[in-house]
Image (cartoon, rainbow, N blue to C red; front, side, top):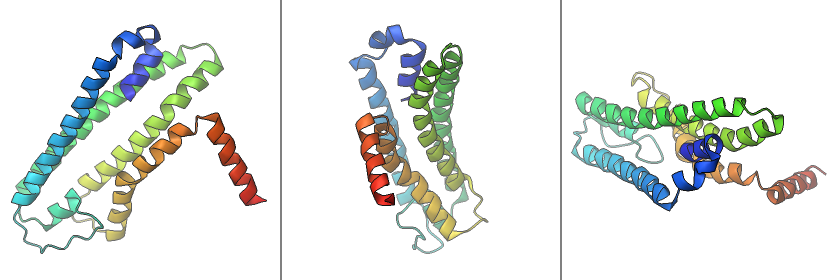
Length: 191
């Protein structure tokens, strides 16, 4: 998404050649492949962990930090965190660099209307990505000595359920028909 926005704003005349169906398929395959590889590594590691602290997870689903709390092996926990941090930081650096280039290009646009249009397409994506990355980082890098089961649950919900639920809503709010329908619904609820 960040690369799409970068090409659309910074190189609009080259959009068709840089983001053809082949480039989109390659990026989708890379995203799915890296996600699948990450999931397989976590699954294989989880099934091979020795568990010393019982087998009850204090969450509504088996997330990695909760399983690592049950493990006897600190080395394995560190390995999982290093692999996860490498993947998350790599993606986040790519996204951040894309947005730095986008914002540099947008700030050179002379009209306020151009600024508004460019920022209105970028800010929602950046907000969802920031929410997701910050909660994942907080959840995975929080020291094990800090234990708040309700806070862990809230953070897990934030990064696992909120971004996928909010993403379609944020992007569809640019649709004028949907905006009008939401405004009518809100005004009828208030009246």
